[in-house]
Figure 1 (spheres, rainbow, N blue to C red):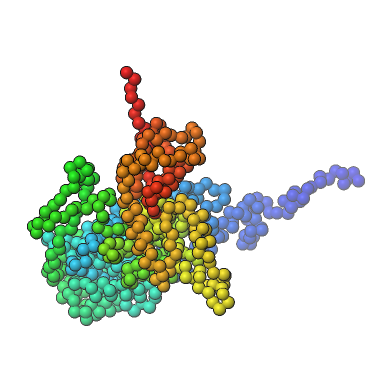
Figure 2: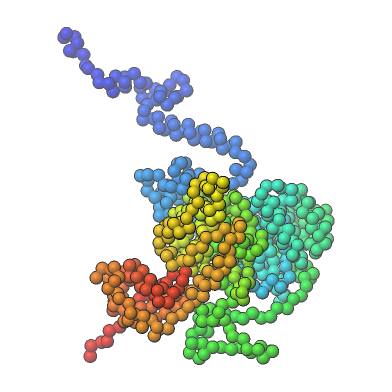
Length: 617
């Protein structure tokens, strides 16, 4: 008994620890997770996972190896889905604050800097009478770089990834006091049967058929490929003037290599460097020598801010042309009817924006495919209807930053917002089969905050109402949707867009497309509406401001108000306090203005100015 009491009793943890290998002793066999110190299990598991990932990296397909992402892979599964992990510090954009996220943020800043240098201007509506030059070639030979060089602006997205340009991009160039149009096409691979390459080839054929001269671009630093030879045979059979531009001839020592490309059968072979600008003058001289000469009438010019101020004081400015015809110059902020209305089609990827553009224009202007993110560059088309000119701009699908990895996708998202800010009206397209998502609300917020008029377009409505023999919907087997109930659900999800008209359409079937034109014309007219100061003062006398749910310490007294600008309607309030209006007061006042004057589909902005009190004598 005494011997038993003299022994030191061990607990369960101590007994288990005594059977484990001592710290620092190397195992005799390959280490396993259960045969090491518990404090080192996590380190060993991490090293093993990294080794397995490195072994798999060399087995990627060439297509996946080419799709290199900016900023590297983020190792956490939650971050790959675009959501920050619980318990980790996050940035305002939803990224985890770690080293990979810092690289991601740095990449986004670089892309935003590049987007700030790109242009959103489109060609004139009357420029369609100018001769057209088509730029074509296989992928990644420098067509978009040459297009940007000739137009003098960064209109097409340029990158190292092949196949960035897909749709036709039009622009205008001037050379030796002559004007012409130029179209940038996607990389042509005639024998590729995949959906998107086949659509790119179809778009390029449309450009080649309407062109007056063709510039085929090849990469002078690589050997001739079969797509080059097949495209050359197609162009030679077309019978149009064709010029072979051997690109990427950056040094004088490389110029002699351009002669090797004469075996394609072209007479005009010109070495150029689109990036550095060498040889561009010789190319333009040769191209413009075969273009027909066309004289266009001088278009009416828009008034600047100084011209508008002078016109307010001295009356409208008239100009007299040689034919003694009186022409009024157009006013930019809405006193006179604008020449064209610019409409941006915005929304998430794969909601039917390109299909809607084709339905509105009655053409196959944009590439349509079930693959999300097909559209990269913004595609615009002019439609004249009922004496009005509409320019519809199909933008790339806007997605979250965490789900946008390729450089071209990031740049297309930023450029979509830039084209939205350059438009007058925005069509917010929503997929009826998916309902209003959080990203739809964010995209609508971009339009609302930028002052663009908004029309909510619920697309694919035919799928919600088309039923089979059993009376259920065909695509999901549920009862058909009620339009009034669905509209109320959209309004509840987008409460801040209560002023925006809502349309139910089917772009694929062309249903209710006429209603889109009518709403766009109405919203554009309401956007440019002006209310006199006398009307606003009489309106203020009728408003019961006691109904506004605003705290008493945040209330202001409005002496009078006036409309300072249109597009969007902007009102200046002269008050007793120089404070920012409470959001509830702004909402109440905007609703009262809409009830009296309309402003359908357009946000209303307010500016506050405190009236100066008289100095005591």
